[in-house]
Every structure is written in C-alpha cells, then in structure tokens.
Image (cartoon, rainbow, N blue to C red; front, side):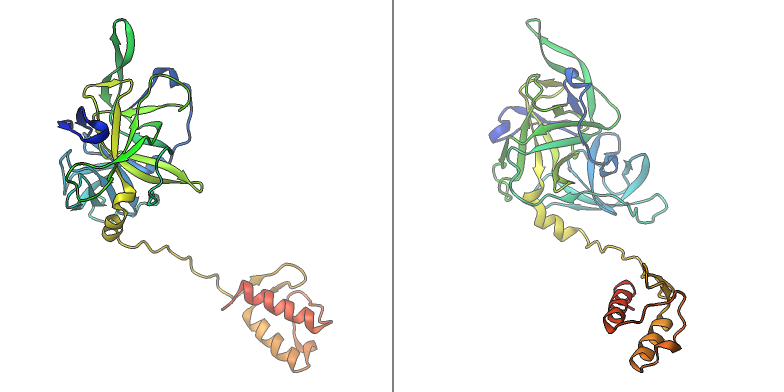
Length: 319
C-alpha cells in the first residue's frame, strides 16, 4: 500500500508510505549477517511486520487490515486475533493465533532495542516489499531502479543517519532515518525500501543478539528507488515504554529438575542416590562408615574428602 504525504525534517519532499527492500545490483554477490527469517513476516499481501513476542507482532497502521487478517511467518500461516493501536503514531501491536484459534507460541522473536544511541549504527533490514526492477536512467546515467514486484523476503543493510520527529507528534524524536547512497562498497548490500515494506524490521547487533530498532514507515519517492533517497522508520527506543505496557511478561520455561533417584558423579564419587547420601552422612558422623554400601567405593580417609563429596552431591542435586 502506498499513499503520498509531506514529511517534516529529513523527508521534506513528497514521500510515499511504504506498505521492498531494494539493493544495488552491483552488490548481489555480497553477503551480510542477518537475523532469523522467523523474526519478520508478511502482512496479508501488502505489508510486513516484525515478531516481538511468542504471540505478538508489530507493524504500521496505514496498510489496513486488522482482526482476522492472515499473516505469514517463515511459511506458516496465522491470523490476527487482537489489535492494540498506538494512540498517536502509525504503529500497532497485534496478537496472533493459529487458524485453529490457539496461541501462536512462536519459538523466536526479537527483543526491543531501547537505548537512544542509534545514530550512525549499522543495521540490517528485512521485508516483503517490491523487489528491484529496471534501471532508471537520467541523461544516459543510471540513477536508480524502478520498483519491481512483491516477492520473497529481502534482506539488505544501511546505517542510521538521523533521528527526528513529526510536527505535532506527542512522541519526540519518534523516527530514525537512513539514506540510500549511490553505489559504493562501504555498506555491503546497501538497501532502501519500497511498496510492501511498511512495518518491516530494522535490526542491530547488540552483544551478539539481533534487536529491533525500528519498523519501516515511509520512503521519499514512489514507484522508483533513486540514489540519495531517504527513508524512515518508527524508532523503538521512543516507544519502548508503550510496547512494554502492551506486551505480556514472557516467563521463561524452566525445565524440571532432574530427579535425584540417581546422580552421576565424576570419580571418585561413583553413582549415588539421595538415600545413599543420607545414610552415608548419618553413618559417617555416627562413626560407622563401614556400614555404607555404595555403587562405587569411596575413599573415606579424611573428613575433608567427605565434605567435598557432600558439597558436590548437593551442588548437583540440591533437593
């Protein structure tokens, strides 16, 4: 979906809201590190989104759709069960479920990058927008590409160039921007966005983990990707408190403790059960160590040996 608007600050020209991800043809042989394809998805047939919880996604509002809309994550189909709109921004969080009405229970999602230090950070961007079409020429020189057709997930990269806000917005500096430069190799697979990319995720590596810093909102030109064009995204750090207020707390599942019926120790402790240990400790301090029968014999030479054994057993089997 695409519509015209006038953007303040960095995107002062007529721009298009994006509902692709276009890279330089000369960069096709380059590779970049990307997040899992399970962290992004296709919204119906006209937009994208990022996955931010086991049952929640985040996207823009302007592409339409809502409860009942079909969304696709890594080839699996889900439906929107609930929509929570931001009160002023072009942003919404949606709870999804499978088509049987059960929670999606996704195994992978992106954490929100909530620090306001995005300036000059490199990021990767993934969406389901229109791909690269024919060359655009001006006086015989290539200046970009036509938008192609919507297709598969596309990944590219860019660098945050600025942060800014929309006039009248109650959320200050709610947007981050990037520019698609003429061909060079300083940013491998340098990308811009196109129709179908609204809501697609911008990700940064933070301590070895890809985190979501923005979702695509707008691009400067419509129907073409032009060298030097700018595009922007809704800045996650500006909305982190609202997102936290909407998302339910995710409690990590703790695997059940191993039963203490049999605990394997390294030598010289052998394999013992809780009953063995209780009997051993009681017998030892009663001065009757010879009364204990163990799977593998213990050297009962000193009290220090015994205490080391008890400490290791309790560390491995505290209950």
